[in-house]
Image 1 (spheres, rainbow, N blue to C red):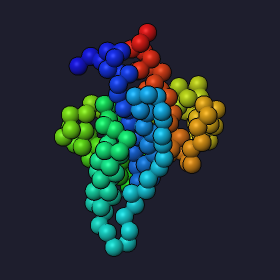
Image 2: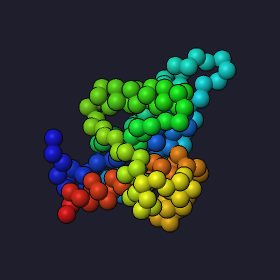
Image 3: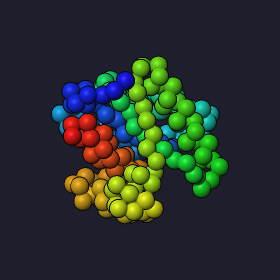
Image 4: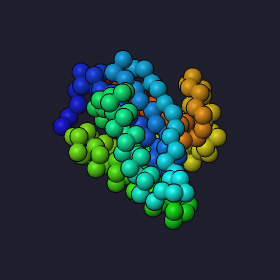
Length: 166
């Protein structure tokens, strides 16, 4: 379905940096951005699948309090440094897409290099460089996960929302 300018002006957008320490940013239809991080590491008494149940609960609570979401964007990682990180990312992505499908919410991945290039001018920028670039936009992220979600939100706003208006 093609989006119009009016559609984008009414959408609440969710941007996610998926992982055990997930960064998130929400932009309201009025343009107000809130962000943070949430840790989905299971406790020593919980099974590995608990992280995904906590993640789904987090999405539902955020959808109910800050949404409803009109669209979800996530940082699309194509290469991981470790097997555990790759498996965790795949699990979060599977649960995110199923959660969105169940609610009829469109979702789209944006490659990491695209986000970094937009934020810093370099597709291979470091975490510190992305953090600094986001701070230059007036945000105060707690860590690189929140900074990545905010950088993604900036990309969405400039390339999707404003792109429809132009």
